[in-house]
Image 1: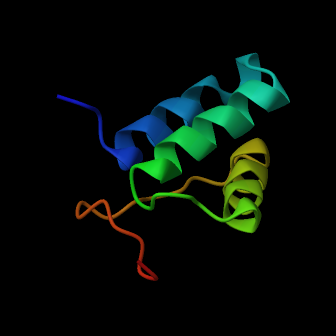
Image 2 (image 1 turned 45 degrees about the vertical axis):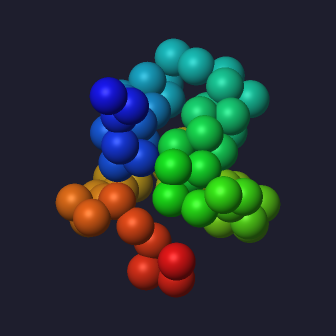
Image 3 (image 1 turned 120 degrees about the vertical axis):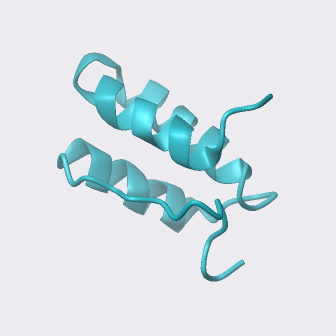
Amino acid sequence: MRPSAGQLLDELQEQAPTISGGQLRGGVHRALRGLTQQPPTCQVDSVNTLIRREVRIEWPGTDRLSCA
C-alpha cells in the first residue's frame, strides 16, 4: 500500500535538515500529487518553504486538500 501524502510529508519534515533543496522540493511535489493530479507550483513552493523554516505541518486524516 502506498503511503499517504500526510505520511510522506511527515517523513520529509524529519529528513529536511539532511537533504538538498531539490530533494525536498521533489518530495513535496510527489506527496502533493497524492492529493491532486498536478499540484500548483506556488503550493509546492509554499509547503517547501514551511518545511525549511521548520514549521510543523499537520495534515488531516482524509488526505485531501480543502481546495480539492
